[in-house]
Figure 1: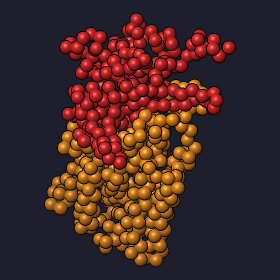
Figure 2: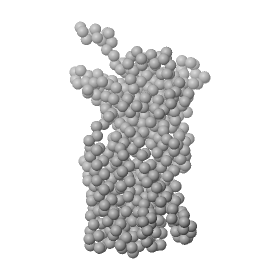
Figure 3: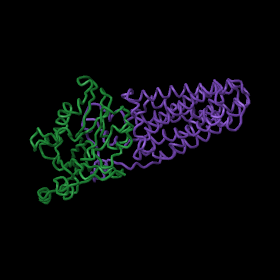
Figure 4: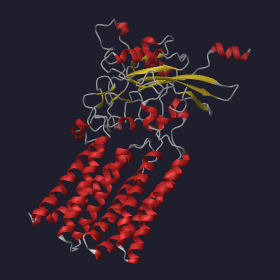
Length: 310
Length: 219
């Protein structure tokens, strides 16, 4: 598939915000004593990230002014469900921020962290199922897709949470969160590697024979029926070499997982917070590469019909 | 699961006689670009890198190893699946399957151009209109086949009317006595990519060794 930059930015930024908010909510539910300014700042940063993510998702649409129509088919469409849950999630975070800043409704505020955790997980589920429900895109049609979206979001969110805690002067919380972020990043890497191994072993169900019904063992396309470009030759091909894909895989494993985890370990061992702050942008760049690879690696069966230009 | 409809219009394509002339491609483009679906935009049509929207393509495939090869011209358009995976994924309901005749259509006024339906079609049958930014696809000439102003023999998809070798049959595959049902039944009509259980309405008739060819091969 052709990786769309809008969707890459949307899913990575939203994932970080979801993970950070889950970290904050769990900390509060466990009775962690956090400062007013830290809670307000974390909510504000996540709200900003979610709004940028929402904006990026609009860029993916051909007719963004009609986006409101996308709530209609929630009974059958995971995309429709995502379109409902994302604004709901943003609204709950915004409500939390307002209640926190104005010091209103303490009872309701106690329930908000739980609501945020539930909505964050539901949002990951919707996003992942958009891809995992397409059974003929075999690279995506696996529970590992949800596991990856969940774990990568939690890991990158925990890293940002640690950095924000450090900036708010909450040293012990920051280094505690960094430890959790290292663990989550390692687990996320393990699951991502599991999906890479699975996809490397995939046997594609569609073949030139099944695509055409021609029964010969040798079936070759001689012409796709046009010499010009078309939507089908752009949308479903990444247009890069296999060597480029391999490099991208190495980059995302290093920058998305290995380097940030190492930086956070260095931060914890040396007590130098700077390394913690550095881990966040490094990990984000790596996760952009990870999401690019997620799309590029998916082989759509329609590509069988568009192999030969002539 | 999709409900079973009483009527399902479809094309049946005879690979024995398709000569790969692309008359169905051009007649489809001509009819639809001036019909209710159109215009089928072409961008940079006279430039170095042209691109355009088509509802129907004729591809060329080759089977076997030289000298035992066959060239097969292979027309390809939306298969109007009985269980179309492109319909349930549409977030707005713009992509739908008509209950009265099983044609899969897009409501261009509701489409937001998210392209998810195209991702959900294993056959690559849908093409985004790059100028209007809405999804388009074969309509089975829905604005033609019911038109009372046309003579009854013209109430067929443009591609079917244009084919010089009669390689394209059109009709209701739920009516056992229709031309298409008989052709599928008697000549081994098959569906594309049966592994995804989309139940395409369109069928293809496989190459058959005719008596004449068999006799000639014996000589």
